[in-house]
Image (cartoon, rainbow, N blue to C red; front, top):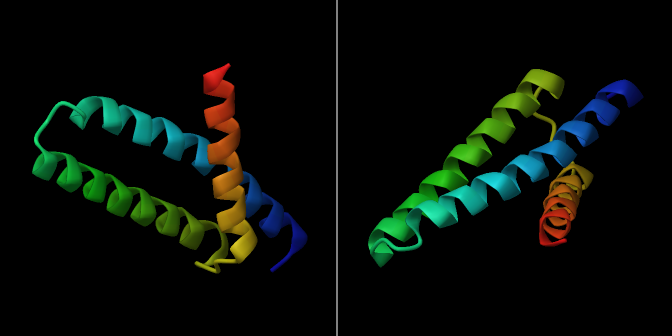
Length: 87
């Protein structure tokens, strides 16, 4: 995998962490007052859909090659966006 493709994947993973944080916050606000079964089902559906979206775009960018530093960039983007929201 070339350096340009890796950089694009890292950038995509970072911004996907932003999207993931916003999507989880929205989902939590939407389902927090519902019954426990509905909340768990909604959370499971969100995790499944977000995973499928990430894998789909990863296949479009670099044929689905997943490295540990892509996952670390997702977590870093999630953390940065959550800290930014807290301020």
